[in-house]
Length: 275
Image 1 (tube, rainbow, N blue to C red):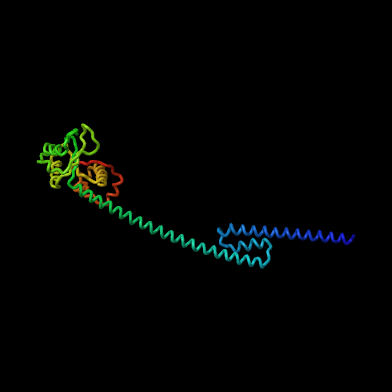
Image 2: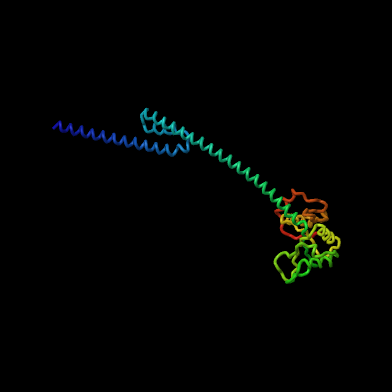
């Protein structure tokens, strides 16, 4: 009877110890899981990986050998982390250098585009050197079967008293959409600049109800519009405003190229009077 009771007590003790060991193992496993999770979530944000792991494992009451092993693992992780940081810095530096290079290329290309635009504008204006735009009340109304060249020849003879023939005109046509009964301007490309100069001078001298304008590029026409508005607001300072061979002249001042940028964006299209 005593032997059976003793065996029963020993079995209970063994079961109790086994359950305790099991609970301790689960607690250690939970601690290790917690430590692993903490390490995973903090190594990417905080560099001191080894200190974090050591502190967490000390709280878990692990043995010294286990702590040494974890310290080694932490140092390896820290080393990998530092390596990745160095690589990331190199990538960022390379990216910044690439961006700076591309920005410099864009700036150089913008300068080149501006230079090409100026060159194109110069060529365009040179092609217009023999061309004028004629408008004003003395210009005949538009008709269905008109010949613009004949109308220009007759108008010039009548109002400017200049001997002119159709052979002096290369090409002539109305500007803008058709409007019966309206005095649409006529653009005239002459055979030579001498005839153009003669027409402009006569228009300034005779002052008829006829306007003869140089044909300007869109850029120069926009600038000219702004300059004419400035002259209109300050007539006491500027007595004249006109163009000569595509150059804009205000009073006795030749408009320098560096002023173009200041007025170009504010301008709108306009047909200007030559005299």
